Image (cartoon, rainbow, N blue to C red):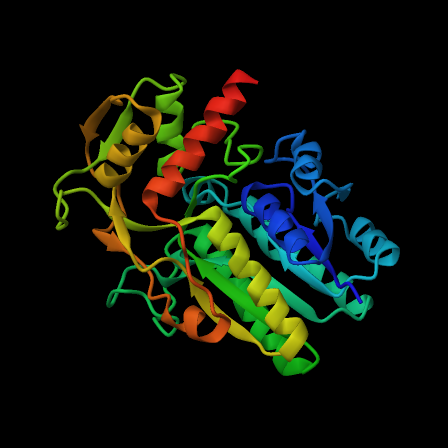
Length: 336
């Protein structure tokens, strides 16, 4: 019997790639998205990749009536919850917006699930819940010390899940704390395409490569790292999507709650990514050195051992794969 997964925020960057991997694994999938941060044509692109019609409903997780109608129309077995605001800097400026969408929205989804007798949920969390590193690499038992409203909203949702399970043992959940998704699908039909100035490094470099932005600003080159620039754990979005498939399958097959890092365990510097992207696009890219940003740290990377041992999760793609797939996506997008 085919099982059905509801993807909230399923038209977004990570959600759309997870849709493809779920379909490849034999799941039926229903997308819910308000398309506030997703391309209008992503549904057609997903249909093209999977060679099958896409079931999608346009609506907001803040609308409880809408959510109830979706559960009434489909036999949902589990939910993977992506729908959230995600820009750290913006969250500092608009904390109320972030708590409304990320916390109230998630609470609404959980209430709709409860009312429909659906008790399996994978929650899209973030490694920023760890805050300043007490030790590296980050393990799942590192203290939680969020420093932004965005990170705090994710901690609040994680706490809600734990308390919900304490109140009702029918609930099972997977909390996936991931690091820096990058890259695009091999088809070059879906990828990351921010509507405004990107907050993340790779899409910013991509816009320099396409000529949309004049140059990259490297925020600090005096960190305690091999080349002086900040080091981060980047994971290919397709690897990340497969981790979500493994997580939801674990919930459905074994009813086993888990909290896991999804990363590579490898740190790449700003200059590592810049040079890799130059190889991908075949040209030098302009950059300037700027001052450090407040709150930035030297290194930030995962210990992926628990996810490997528990789920069999293993990232298979490296930085060059991420940059090459990103360049294929953005160059096709700009020329289409």
